[in-house]
Image 1: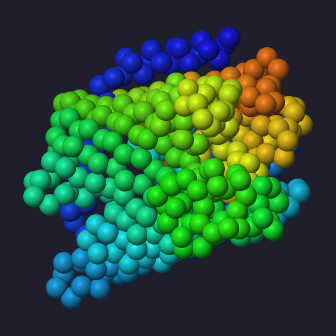
Image 2: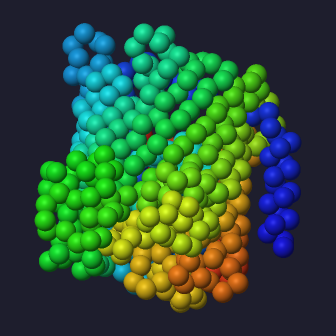
Length: 495
């Protein structure tokens, strides 16, 4: 009850600061790049052996689940112009990030980024691991996009696409698009599947110039796990593969090419297919920038029959434009509501569109280890891996998640303190109902909160001191309080 009161109070604060700001969603018009680098040392501690939810969620899989822990994180991004005329239209570059984590249980070395790319104007071709957010939603203070949130480490892939919105020719900037097409592969040491491949693409359209007071957005993303090996519903342990099945998979057609297929393959789309259909509106006023967005998930074709439309991510983001130098300011706020409990209902009848439910988000009959990468949910972190709750709640067979029917109300705020310290907070209250086949008794509720602060200090030529406190209170996880403390030095290799 106290958690609900806190959320209500802070929601009122957010509304009262509704004169807020963001830079307009601008097109990339200058083809320039800057080299950046950093090194960061962080310590983690908590009241239990588990790191609190918001300390580790949506951190690209680099924050350890176990506590206490120490982490050394370093990275560099470098781009070089290939143009001799000063236009900088052709650029080539790379990015590398390395993380070393030390805990009582194990030590880990991670590479959340390792990519090379070539750019021409607002287009890029890249190979490797690269951090990426997909979808029309806030990626910093919010809960993260439904299908691709930044919760797991980036998946190695080849990708071709745009860098921001690009104007459609002959529209004078009134119509723009942003999209990409990529293929990659998952880790081989998954619990159940192996040799699993990734296909991913997205397209978003904007109506309105980058400087317009009103901009409308629409688009969709499509993700598929396919072509690997699984002991479930396969012939000789192999899922459909080959060029013909690749085309069927990319286009989302039913059926499979070739005779080496099961009844499951013949009556379903190839692999584990999912994504979201996104809508957004952006309003610019003199004092604020307001973004309203909606993501509707799809997984097994039920969206075609308009079942499960209750599910989705709904969000409101407000940013201030005008700062007045006060000692305490709220500069940005995000309010979201995530709901995934409907799933088109509990029944799935393939011949009856009104009963095409039981979407069972992020689980799949063949890909039993689900929509995950190194046991981290690739989509919204509130659809939790079974491994996160197995000591408190029953598992759902050997499926990836035993908790994909959730509702979440979330508030994120950002601001400044004493004009020098940047603070952020994330406050989330969730109800968790498990799955249709294995429901959680009583739909346990959970509050997860985080407060971070950072500011510059005059050591080592200017360093950022960072700290946070976090808490998990409720019935889904064990009650946990945690903290972090770190130092970050930027620009060691910068131009």
